[in-house]
Length: 437
Ligand code: XUL
Ligand code: CO
Image (cartoon, rainbow, N blue to C red; front, side):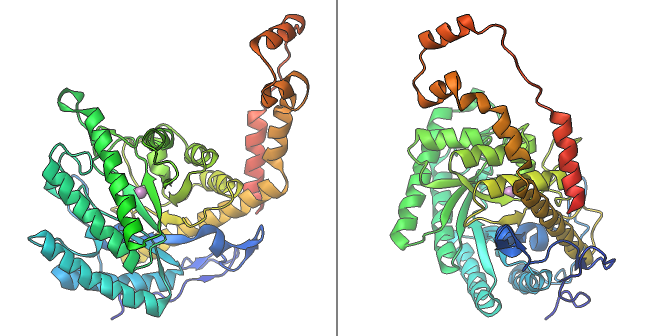
């Protein structure tokens, strides 16, 4: 059964093309800094936004018109699997990602739910074998069902905690079965609404225990995926424990988990935390914890997670600059955790939105490569910190300096001279590079 009959395989046609169903920048086999674009970007489609989401918002029901709408229950779940592989093939994306509940409906009991999952997982496995498409990561949805009203691994109720553990155990088995490269933990409702009824210390200790159990079980079954935590500061809870990269890293360090996890960073989560995406990537990278990216963008005029497709060239350029400087995305990838707008309800919009995101990232990659090849920012930064390479600065960096030796230096070093950071000039240089590639 074909769900996207009217769309063929999306090809690279280059900058001159006026075909909306073609790539103008994403040329998978084009080599940039020694690697193909496909290898740099490792794109993934988010199953939940593309196949499960229906375009509802708090004020209205779904608007999406989909060829699989006529099905329900397990038939709908199976139709979505077929649609997923047809879409991955036509859009030329190598990976996909899902939550357990995106791919199969919950049953009346955990046993029934797992049975539904097994049916779909075996169908996914067959389709992966015949198509060569791969699973970037899977995760557990421990936030939609009402049982998770007070969280999952930070729940106030041990029965809920046990249920969540069972769900993650199954998720790890599914990840192993499908050869997932990563396993993601996003703390859906791991946070709190008010401290007045919350034992923060116990909740965080329990969360760490939960992660320890997951690590132990993955080891036991020989599932060697990279474990990722996805920070988000708020929504759905008022305060999410994995607030941002720095908070999550501090949590992992406190509980001795820092060498077991990396981070799955999301652009819109960064902006909700009051950071840029590149800030979050830099914080992860300098701590050796850059794992994977959820590519999207927020709306700076709105205070919630709008999950728009990334179309901001400035942001994708700086994102890819950080990724390349960090040595690449490794086993991670660039997952479009993005949904078409409620008003973009036609099926064609799924293609047009992914093309927009992929072209924007490919363009950003080319611009970032040029920034790196021409050492634009490197030479500015090197020059700016040159005082730390000689004299008193070299003493500070080598650890030779003391407060007394610095005082002696400061007493005779008058006046101090600073130099301009030239921020505006640098931004114009980046604009010029973006428009030249
Ligand atoms: C929610 C979000 C999730 C995670 C996976 O904001 O980003 O979809 O990416 O659970
Ligand atoms: Co995400």
